[in-house]
Length: 142
Image 1 (cartoon, rainbow, N blue to C red):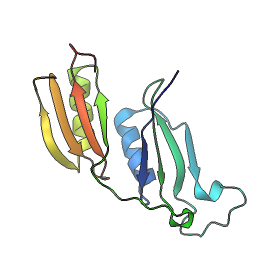
Image 2: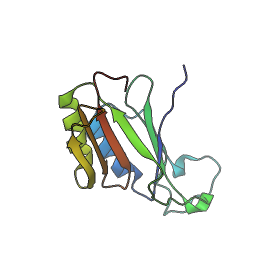
Image 3: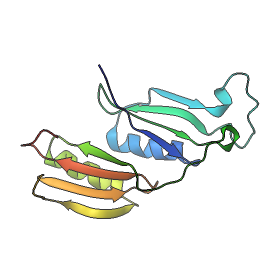
Image 4: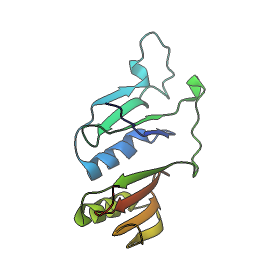
């Protein structure tokens, strides 16, 4: 089965962000690896506890994945508006719960409301700079 899994990059806040996402979605991390876990690499003390890779299952087929960028590997993260994670929910209660939890401390772009294509739709940037859209359209194929 083919699956597309969103991969999020952070500047040192990956673990905090993923603990927050875990509090919203539930479940357990499949994997948490830190830069200090890389065999044979001399990792500076300032980078050792940063997240090299983390995976949180959202469904049987979808995982939310992420890492902290590390300049020792030539990586930097620049937040922008080129990617939005869209969640297609199964019911109104779930839609409201996820929207309210994920948007807390962030910036709401479009409040959760009825649209011509969905019973409920809303957009926001979470407190970590990640753009999200929530879509509940029971009469459409999300």
